[in-house]
Length: 217
Ligand code: ATP
Image 1: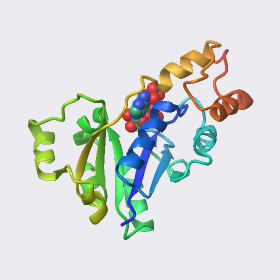
Image 2 (image 1 turned 135 degrees about the vertical axis):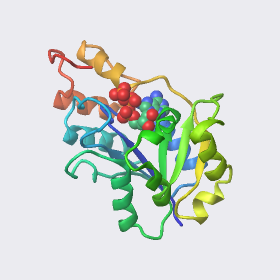
Image 3 (image 1 turned 120 degrees about the vertical axis):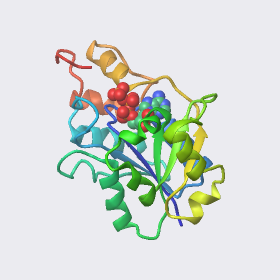
Image 4 (image 1 turned 180 degrees about the vertical axis):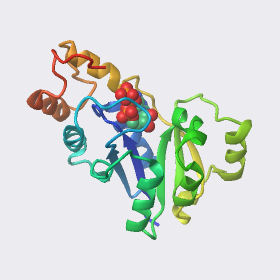
């Protein structure tokens, strides 16, 4: 079913933590592609600092030439908040026969019951939970029950059904965050070796995180 990985985020800016996770999941789960979806108007956090066009530009610069990595701009061009369920409905309509695999971190997964229309998510897609080595998945409460019902350790399940399973997978953790990067750049620091060189060049060229801009956090 040519599974599509869906990696959403603010990507303000994209960094090697995002890219390494996406790459490991693409390879380990034998996904056909990994789509990066910068969000437009994030519902769960304060507004992004760099505007959506620049966040798209930075992701494009980061993934250029990497087989299997695809930039998907649908959330940026949709009006209103970027809810996962709306994005997944849209993708389901575009790719009716393909497996959709929504990538989430363990933190996001723990908050799943607070997502807008979260029960529909598993009707539209599989959920792949990326966690740091050694982390335990919940075994109690609503999420523990959900994992007992929907959890799988078989990659094949992501290839043989379009939606409905939860797959939990450890990935290498790089302690890089966009927040720390913005702070670094806004205070005049150099993000070299934390982000790809083309992203660094893009930030410099477009002055995405000006040193003088207040509230750069
Ligand atoms: P911020 O610091 O602005 O909150 P962030 O670095 O967490 O940003 P996002 O764009 O919000 O970046 O993250 C997109 C996705 O990437 C989320 O699912 C998040 O859990 C994951 N992610 C963020 N940082 C890392 C990292 N260092 N390693 C692996 N995954 C990451």
